[in-house]
Image 1 (cartoon, rainbow, N blue to C red):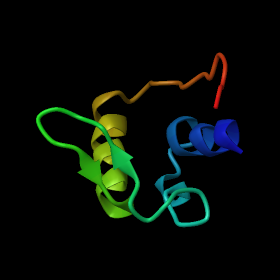
Image 2 (spheres, rainbow, N blue to C red):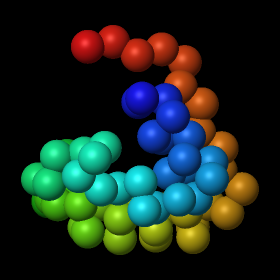
Image 3 (tube, one colour):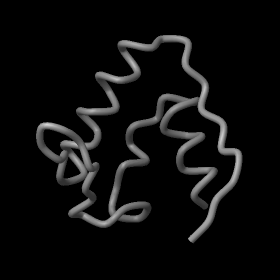
Length: 65
C-alpha cells in the first residue's frame, strides 16, 4: 500500500491520493521552519514539489516499520 500510494502521488502525479483512505487527517510532514499539517496542506506542499521538479521519479528502496 505504501509503495502504491507514493507511486501514484509522485510518479503519476495523482495528488487525490492524499485522502483519509491513505493518510490520517492530521498527517504531519516534519519540516523546518514549521511542520506541514493536514491533508490539504500536504497536497499543497507536494503540488509545489511536483511543479518544481517536473521530471522527478520516486523509487522506494526498502520499507520498515
